[in-house]
Image (tube, rainbow, N blue to C red; front, side):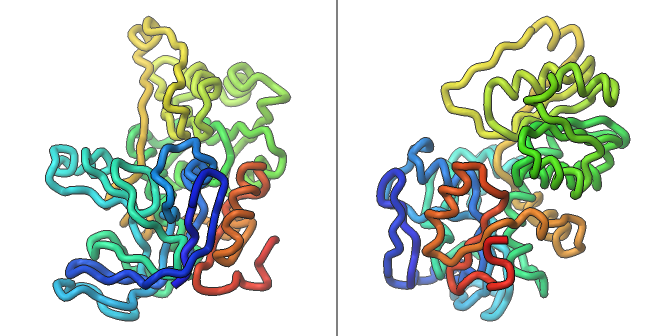
Length: 350
C-alpha cells in the first residue's frame, strides 16, 4: 500500500509498504477520505514534537476490509468513521467519562502521549471500539466527525444556556464548525471575528449573525456596542493576544473557552481580581471523547452541519504537501485527501 510519511520537518514522501495486519480486536479500514488538520501541519513543520518518520492523518473514514477474530459487531463492507483517540480505559479520567484526558492516550496520526501510524495511507488498522457506522453518509462529510466531535466536546465545557450571546474568534474550519454548532445548541446571537474577508462571508453563510474585521475595529469595543454583553467567547486561533482579547470580551459571569492550540511556552495576562469578583471563567478543551464522536456522526447523518461549504481543496495522497503549504499560507479552508483515488474532478481546486 502507499502511505505519506513525514521523514523530517517540511518533508513528505509517498512510500510503499506492507498493508498492516489486523489484530484480534481490530478492523482494517480502506481509507476513502481524510481531512487535513492544523495539528498535521504542526507535525509537518516541526512545531509539534514528534518522532520522525511518522504517518499523520486523523480525520478519516472508509470501508472495513478485514475484521479481527474477536470482533463481532462489524463485518467486511461496513462504512465507518474513525475516532483516532484510543484511551486506556483504565485510568481515573477514562473511568469518569473523560477519555480525552487519559494519562496514556494513544492517537492514530494525531497529538497524544503515544502516536501511532495515521490515516494518510491507503489502509489503517483501528480498534473496533473506535469506529462509528455511517450508513450511506458520503465519505467526505463523514471525515468531519473527528473535528466536529472536538467542537462538541468544547461546547460541552461552556454550559451554554439558550439565548446567550457568543463570540467566536477565528473563522478557520474549526471556528466555522463551532459557529454552526452554537446555533443548533441554542445560542441567541453568534458573532465571528475574522480578518479575512472570504472567511467572514462563509461565517455569515453558515449561520453567524454578525461578523467583524479585527484589523478594522477593536473587537473588545465594537462587539459589545453591536450586541451588548457577551456571555461566552471562544478563541479558535491559538495565540496569546487573541486569548486575552476573548477574555476581555466577556462580562460578569462570562466564560472564555480556549479552543485554539497555543504554543506550549505561551503565557497570557489577566486580572485575578476580575476572575474572583465577576465570577469570570477561563476553561480549556482538548480533543474529543467517544461520546462526542458518536454525537458528531449523528449530527452529520441528519444534515445538521454544512460541510460542503467548508471544503475548498481536494487532493490525492501525493498532494498532501501542497495541502500543507496552502494551510501555512491560510489559503482556503478544509483540505481533503483521498488516499485510494483521485479527487472528484468536478470538485478539485474549487
